[in-house]
Length: 68
Image 1 (tube, rainbow, N blue to C red):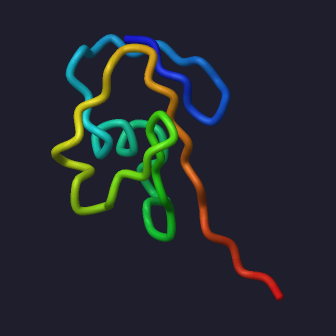
Image 2 (spheres, rainbow, N blue to C red):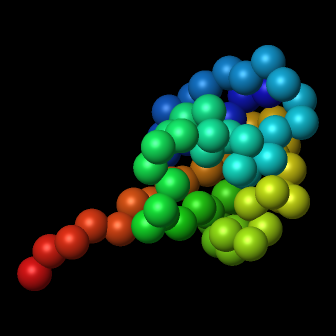
């Protein structure tokens, strides 16, 4: 499976990845304070375990930052 994550193309051997599985692989220690958009549509955190990714999905991982 080929996915575009934050404008970088990556290959995955599994054909059945959920959003949560992808996050566990890509950012296992930093999953608080993030938002996920797939093909320009936000996926709520409650759906991360249920939302399966498709080949060539465009995924944007957005991290909240502090500032002032």
